[in-house]
Image 1: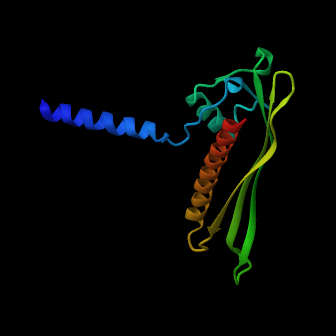
Image 2: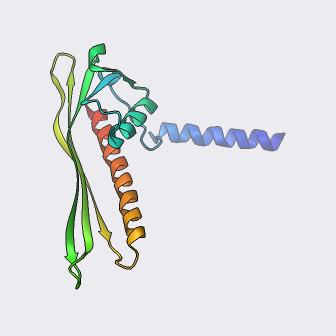
Length: 164
């Protein structure tokens, strides 16, 4: 029993110290009151980026509403792009190394149309080396990288919303 109490006390002490130093879990942001009732425009429930963004905002305790429900703020998502640019071309004329870019432009306005967060671009880049002998694994690696880049863009959006 004493061992359990020592373990519990040690755990409580560690958690208290982490909280005192300002440490918080990854993706844990503190959003202002103005952003607690938020609408996303355009509303596309089938967009993988918006699905990830909605899940992360809901995890932060944000109430997501439609534009008709009078939100306190509107997150405007514009110009979502995923671009693949060849960097190195091999002997056969096929790209050996590609640069992947995932970008998004965001703006946040309040219910009166005042800008809470001016128009900003969010950009994530990665380098992908292709293996011409393993086409399927290269395609799977590209898909996985695109998902990771999408998560990184969402994390950047959350950090920028925290500053709004």
